[in-house]
Length: 246
Image (cartoon, one colour):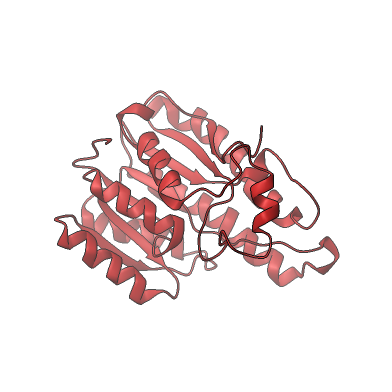
């Protein structure tokens, strides 16, 4: 397992699903972890208790990332409570789909606020505290490489914005020894996209392996990029999608 002893990580949207799996994996690797949540307070605190019972350290931060101040505030709270920040995982986001004609301005603004603006603001704040060996990892989407049909315009747009951000960060922060990467998941079995859901058969058919992945598959990729093995990986994406984009 990648050794993250002495490191501090912040995972946005870390109370459940993929985010919770990432929090658990980073903590198991030795990192002290802060996680944000919006409404799932019980889940967030239960996860923190579980980590602490195993000898780890976790901080829980309530953060509504639709508010511009929430992202930098979460970074500053992480630094106050855990002393520093070495790893940022931008996981929070909305799974949104539907016909182009039915996308409301309210829905558009919410996706842009969380999936794009909050990522930028969190990175901006975290970069001020990071030093040599810093890691910025964003959770993208398999739609960055392949959009299989209609109704995914908003999701594809929002996640594709992370590509340009990550390439720009790699160039700007590389001289400081900070890397920036994306992990692009395919169909992952979570409560937001269950493996027995209405569209699960179609999603499985698009993969090379014919099945859904698990949240721990994404967490393993994040831990690799956050650890010593990821020190020479920057400005690029890692697809964890079961061959969805092949």
